[in-house]
Length: 427
Ligand SMILES: *Cc1c(COP(=O)(O)O)cnc(C)c1O
Image (cartoon, rainbow, N blue to C red; front, top):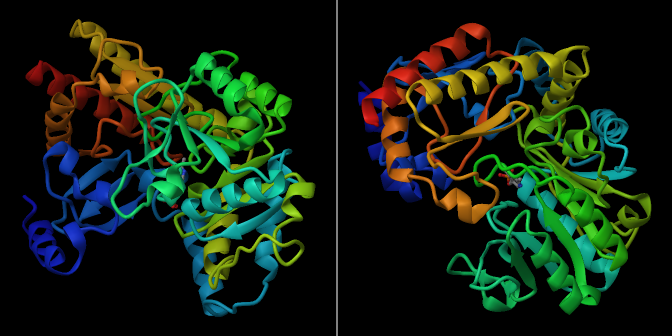
């Protein structure tokens, strides 16, 4: 029972739009009401009614060490005792920036911000300033935060100029955004042939997680690297999810494709608000006060947030960490596939490292259109029943499930058993 969640939700509805501070939390896509949480412990979340769940949201990615990791909590505590914010530089910011630079060979200089949205917004401003061009290519189903110019819908046809995906965004602000299908070489090629010399940047989640997990086709990232070089356009990897998730050098390290600019967030704040954008020194030197491109933040590089990020990254630098994550994630993937097989279901599981999605469709999911082919209604029922089994999944079909280093065989086995039980009931 979730009486107290209901109680808080009713109060929240009166003071907060939809009762939540970020829309997906409302659980509308799975026809449910939000759960209010009291605390997290490792791989578990405990709600305000005392129910315990295995958590596969992990705060949408940041909590790669699990909830309330002792090292992270200790660093937050010590940092906060020294003061919460100075509006002036601290040594921790230098350490975090150096650590990120050492892990990401394509990042020579970087700037810390407060969120992934700020990182992508600033990277785009910088790409436009550097190239003196206006157009941006993005891909359908990729999410880059709620930046006006990146909140676009796809029109019909291959290369279409973005239509605002939300009221409140004038068409003028999205008219320079070209929205293309992910993994579609031809669409990218044609768009460059038409507008190549007007395109400032191509922004992409190298492994999209925001339409559910979709893998880049063989050679796709390489192709983006080559074509952007040919047209002197900047390639921007939005690694807000994949940075430090797919490995210590993110997706770029995994695939060996190096962008001009990289956006980071989520894990680098260890559960506190931190984002970053960085890249080639020549480009980054355009950022104020070194250069003319303005970008600032009262709380940017906040000492508490940066300390949580540093503590998290230091844990990730320990040997064997990503191997351990890979093993447990592989167990979940294989377990899910066995369940599907035994129930004669041909639903798809897409996985990259410790992020995966179980798609309720029989078609391969390679882009936004194929993701939309899923039976989201059935997923909603699945989600509700999984919750009853004590498993908290992302409350939407079009999201990644995240594992953490706190997820052990025990949790994964329990999850697989629950998936079997629930799928058998609903098919
Ligand atoms: C979460 C996310 C963002 C936005 O980050 P916020 O911190 O929510 O502003 C941007 N890009 C990607 C790929 C994300 O997953």
